[in-house]
Length: 336
Image 1 (tube, rainbow, N blue to C red):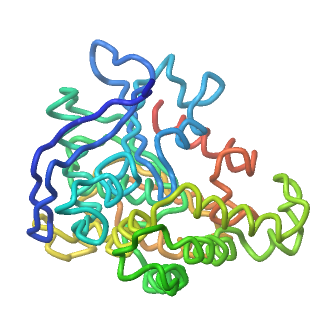
Image 2: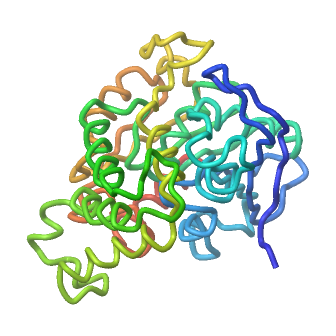
């Protein structure tokens, strides 16, 4: 029995001018929408996440309590649930699937929120990593609709260094002889495993490995962690899906599109939402300095970095209790 909802959008014209045929968003809601429709929290999905992984940020003992808030978790295009290379019809299956930007994702999410659910205001958009990137996009694309945002371990524009990091993991995947330009008959397993193994070196900080913190999250040694990352990507992800989302990530820039026409500073200044920027100082690719620049131009922003040897994965539910507690405090500050 499925535990999610589907929103059929039909054919959608993308920012590139191409058409995403029979577009579909998969989402799940938690809690009850109040009469004033004032308790809406939007929680998009992150790079290797679905609405199920987002449940780690929700709970009766968390600030995002479904007894109090109406929480909507929307799956990003390319994650295997919403429209993706792996689940589309032959005319846009696999490598034929068009490039999708965060502008496209939020354009379609807005249709779900405003047209399907009849919601006019969102109390908070928050999320980790690519989900956090979507919170900026929401605030810039629909500044009158979003009351507050809390991106954590994220940025409003993908830096050159972040782009290069992603080129590295992409190259590890596509070096597999079975990749065949995305036109594979069977998954490029060796490439997927290499992707996961390389990624593990970036997801955690140098201190994480130096202090052997992998033992605190259930691994006997480093090789055990690496094998787990290999197997997670090889068993749970389609190669074209991963690379579609990777391209979306690389293209992340809230100023792209018809509203700001690549004027990045103007896009930042347009954000009216109360904002808390919550980077991790030890994150190796969403760097604190990028958020500090954003803070200068987002008028209602607060800059609250945090230290964690877990690096980017400090935000992964269950890894760092201190990060979790500070995240909940920041969410509470925005919603009160």
